[in-house]
Length: 377
Image (cartoon, rainbow, N blue to C red; front, side):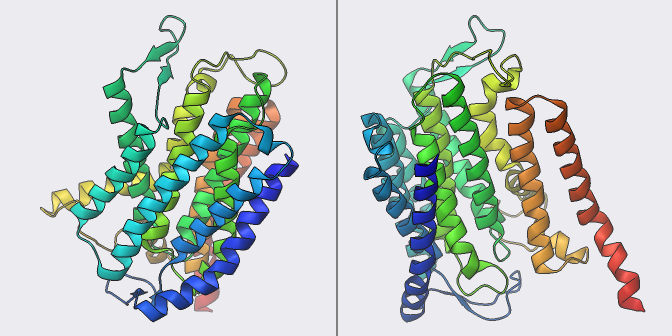
């Protein structure tokens, strides 16, 4: 665990420091987010935060190579992590081009598919699904199905993060929460099944969480730098890649019945697939609502508007900072609530989840009403 913490800190420090360089580079090259009708920032903000986070991810990966425990892990750990980071560099480059010259939607989608294809063709993909009640619970995908499902998962996650990146610090914080939750799940899963604790998913999540935390001081309202498409697509790919690496390395995992690990719960069997989706339930919901909303208007699904969930929170009376914290609370409720209830089925875990849910509901819906009378007086 201490080595993972060092990886996290290395990624955070390098990401934090590189943001200064990336901001200057973006200003020199004209990669700046101008103010548009649908935006909430009032002055132009430079992009290239994704470049800084990619540097943080690489730093965490290199540090892990030189730590006593992680460096002795199996070759698959660093192979899969390296594949995900190279795929991240590919999609980050596509995002940099978009930040510079604003690529059309189909070209960006093509770049996303190329990056996702690189992952699956190098072994980072779904291999099997554990389905309760079907034989021994294992359903093996054929090669074509595995490639298709893997690419859909990667591209869907990439675009979900891209869609939710609408307020200062929102996407970076949500992915940081998701990375920490998924780290806790993958680390615990390896522990209770007697596997080595050096696994790709945990390593990638430590790097990803650190890179996001290092970026957030520069990006929280008022932001001095945006992650841009280079950052949002990078985060989505690395998060989905960590989930795919877990399903590959634990394709035939046997659920352990010892300790407080709730092995009898069917969610334990399905969580390697469900958890990445549950972490992103808020941006995925936002994505689905946006597609439905634009389709009903007769617009293309990628047509931008100002009706995302975070825009509605601002209309409801929240400040930018409070709106972002509320979105973080919802993301954390789903992510950590799922991990707690599934891996640690106890009265305490249920109570913690319920208290978290109640607090989130109060902050979301009651806080604006409590503030309005004070503002009137």
